[in-house]
Length: 414
Image (cartoon, rainbow, N blue to C red; front, top):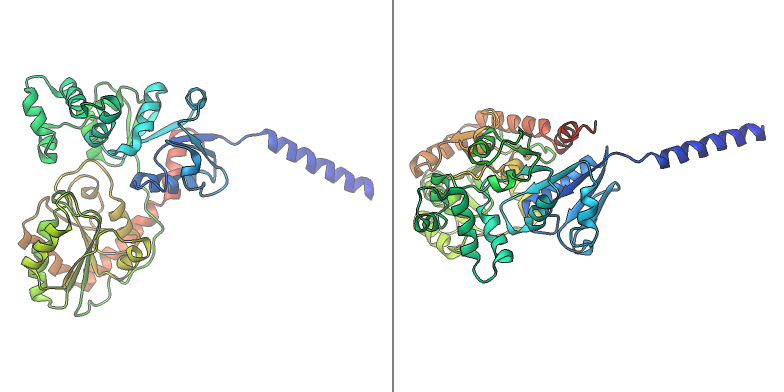
């Protein structure tokens, strides 16, 4: 009997040694990471959590590892880009995904990509914001001049330098002239991932060399049922999640809400996000002009608890964009996961969302048209219920677990 027990123990010990010698496949993410105030940091953390169920994930962060939140689960390890041997180590890695966006948090992503080309996830296809921040590290005494040199190199041609300088001051003019700066990333990318056909089209027009481009699903948080189809009370709550700016058509929303509020005197609008450079006072003055005192709340940045409460208690959301940088919207994804009936711009990633999950409206809608759309949803519990069900279905189909599997297939790791 004892010999049999010993044999079983020996077999188990041998199996443990075999497993220890077999390392799981691994994938490297070069990305911003919490607590950096970047939507891409949070997105990468959620994606890493799901990837780690199947492969080991090494996350390359910009600064010392101690400055960042710990890994979300075993199988995820943080590595500092500033460590002496990181660049050499990265060259030996077979599966690397660079997560690139339009902010200064991506300096290490771009720097390491140039030294070790790999696959790139372009969260944005308008990268002038990133290169504007990066310019300060390249020419501290004249960052604007450095950026303009890069723009002129890519887009100069027949356009005088002074016209390019003026174009860089206006997001609308950059968009009209097609100044995106993705070609600089394409120089080093082995392949590109984007989140919409719109973004793929921008990259195709802008890139400097032929690089395979794949449209990948955008991860949506876990779906949570919402009472979006219930009869609206006499005090309907409308929310906008995210920054207040002209590019988000905030002025049109405030003016439209004024008309809605006259038909529904108890209605409230909460603008839950930080104001742009015009400052909160600008939007507060506009709110006083178009709606009774107290009916529009300009909350500024809200913490996670308030954010979730607004999503849970709102009757509908309005999430607009005047132009698209090719990005998918985490705020819209949160609305979908909450099953919240949402009006979105028929542009870019939101324009490609299914009609049974959101209600679309033309870019830069006139305030009367937007008011009409809001009023129609308030008055129609059946449509709200259908949109709520469609949003939840979309959220379940585009979970981070599903997205992680899609990346693992692209890298040949499943």
